[in-house]
Figure 1 (cartoon, rainbow, N blue to C red):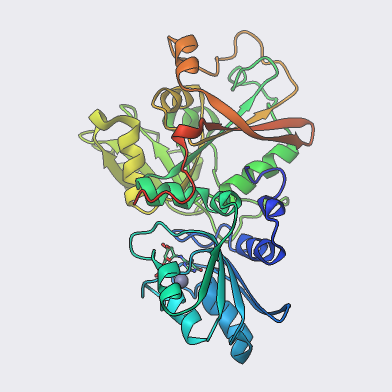
Figure 2: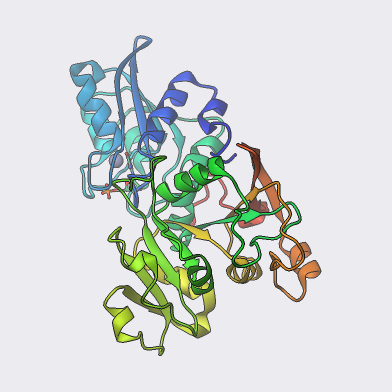
Length: 379
Ligand code: AOF
Ligand code: ZN
């Protein structure tokens, strides 16, 4: 139930919860490290207030909806995509705000597992507010998949994007002028970048493609909000001449193994974070999680894809299938020695598929046991 094709909100049967879902989506890309949340207040069959969470530190969805309803909130039903928070954090508790406003009933999409914020449903019931949960929490969990993953693991949700030729190669012969995927697929990449907190490539890809990793519009202009760019280094360091280090489009983090000193010229251009080489790629991802990266887009080349796959570190794989043949001199997609056993041992399953211009897109996730389960408290 991914979001690239089709709309998760469509599968919500209750019309007010569906509306709350749509409102939540308006915060997509700007709420991190908070989840997107939407709220609708209904009294006597009429919508009297609406709101969504726009940015971390700003008012929560319920507070916005209550403010828009004013006195009409008394005796209303609150439809919220996520359990109202019980805590006073950067903003007052939403559960107490709903109680104080005299809301009579709350219909909740899914529960909040966050250690500090959870417990709002119980608070509401204690205060005499009738509390109901949606029959199916799945679409509400899908709305905040990345955040739920982060809340339960402390590591970013890792979305890997790879473009694939018809004959299954992820890169063309170096120096080849043609691209694997078309213009529409580039717009899709921009969307994936714009919804991520950080975009990462390995040093090998940085060297061969010299990518900008920025979010740009159709006319090439840079978007106001840019994700953090991350260069994953191992033994080798990227050259200080890379385009992204000089375009002024925002921070570039160099994730480097401990004990490998960053060359002084490079050090001035990057924000260096180190990880223990013995902790491997999982350790590097933990470092990103620790610095507040909830969702990470990896634009992986074969080497990084192989390392992520073998480490079972992929939370979602987005494949863009182009219609051209790359030929036998193009590098293989997967470089693992034991491909057959590896792929059988850690299967992915398709969750979404569609057409993007002249290309096809498929979206894959790990099998169920590897995914977050609705209503499970793992915090
Ligand atoms: C809600 N409504 O609209 C949102 C909620 O950083 P704070 O203090 O704003 O709190 C963020 C936490 O509150 C976040 O981790 C999540 O558990 C919850 N988010 N809760 O009632 C909202 N955005
Ligand atoms: Zn709240």
